[in-house]
Length: 153
Image (cartoon, rainbow, N blue to C red; front, side):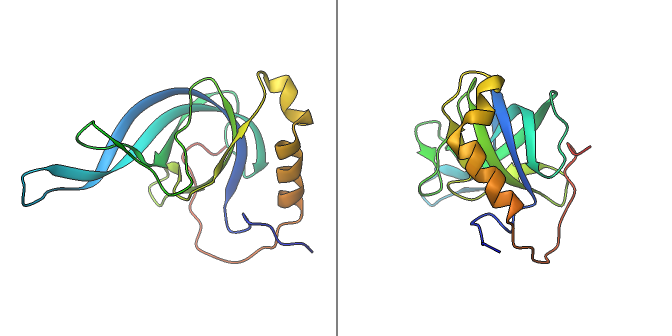
């Protein structure tokens, strides 16, 4: 059985980004120069269109958080290398995991694949979508601690 790059993730799905809701920060501290910094997380409202792996609620907006976003000073953006912020109105294949508090999020680079489609009907003929369906079908299972997302059915 072929291996795929996303075999450890608990959830893979297609979603439309409805809106960017807010940026949250962790590890907030003031450095010697008095500048306040923190690690940004951008929170989005998304609507799940199709579950490729996992069972998220479909066709209802849910919150989704992603590592990266506007820095605490509001003057720059921090992202994981090779990553991107999501754009409202676009469709993505998202690979994610549930946190132990039930939040659904994404914390690794290259885990949002933008689909070049303008409607839900176009998704099934998209090459990336077809490829991900194959990856999930040929998944190599391995055991790890898993958590349940609040957005799961």
